Image 1 (cartoon, rainbow, N blue to C red):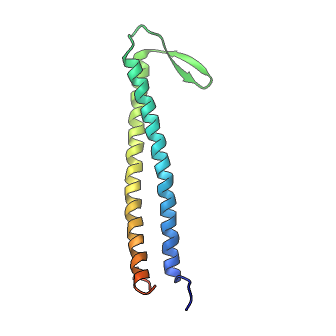
Image 2 (cartoon, rainbow, N blue to C red):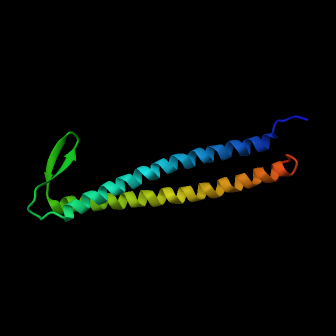
Image 3 (spheres, one colour):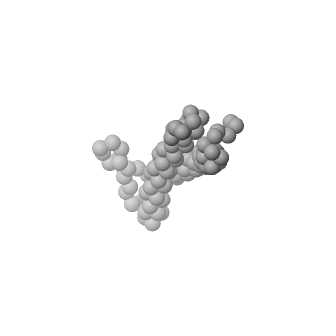
Length: 121
């Protein structure tokens, strides 16, 4: 008796591994976005603790550019909203991929428990 998995199971296993890699990539993207959100939140807190007359600067490339405090707060709030939208989109993707990965795991488990046969697709 051959120890090889049937082709259909090999394909499902390969797909499951791809989904797991995609989940890992999404995890790192989400963590990066969360870090960006924390940095923006910290900057916004600092800006809210100073008065309007305090000069503020923004790094643009390799130079510091003086900015209006209110204008900078608006820019950072807009960036924060974009980051939140990105995090939500990543979480939706993660959810769908996890669901599909769970389905594949169950299909593989059932097929292997059922004598290595393949379940109908």
